[in-house]
Image (cartoon, rainbow, N blue to C red; front, side, top):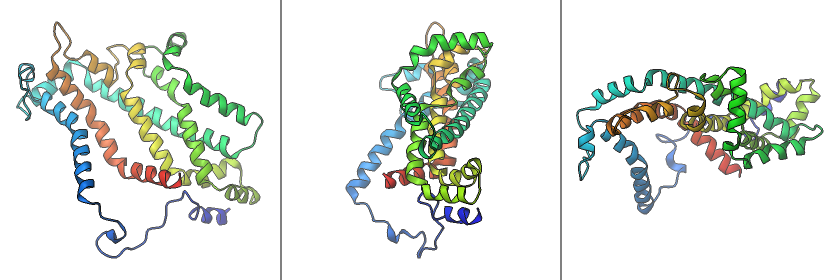
Length: 300
């Protein structure tokens, strides 16, 4: 078994050992981009960042200032007042906590269960493998709105409505996640490596947790991040099953600044407060996510 674990480092999906490079960062192997590429990338970056900047400007202005023509393009001095009002009015403290719990549980569950299912569909032989995988992929063609009423009735009978469990349970496994991990397992995990483990007497569970999981770490990081973002931005199902007393961030934003007219400065303040945790998560996992995507593109 130890010999098999040593060969994991040489597997196609395993992280390569670090090598010392000459110079400050080993940039000699990287081809410099021309100025047209730099200009295009700069324009794309500015266009991508502008909505977030405009949300920050709107959050720091009053509602009357936002309605001016032309609108102000620089931040004002009402940011903290708007954040405090939006925090109290939208119950953002509870909403952020709920969204963090919901998104983290869904991301962890999806990564774990989809990785196990993807490994089983890719490397294990059992009766009905192809039919079950085709059925799983077929569920991706069913609009999720069609299952809202049966799902709500089921959650109501279980007593989970108006509780975050009703948001977590239905999305712990996704067909996209199973398909994504199966394709990565097929490309990254050599069958000979698994056979060597079985010959050494290791069980399938031992091989999965000791050999397969380290190889799949880049794909698991990408899937976890995509799932976390999707769960954080989900609005339709949480607004159906959760009330205003126990909201997620997206449900809370729908209730901020709404009375006889919409106060967009409070809405922008809520957007800024609800976006910051996602930016922090992406900043922490960004390098692994980009590395995983690049590794997948090279394999393709």
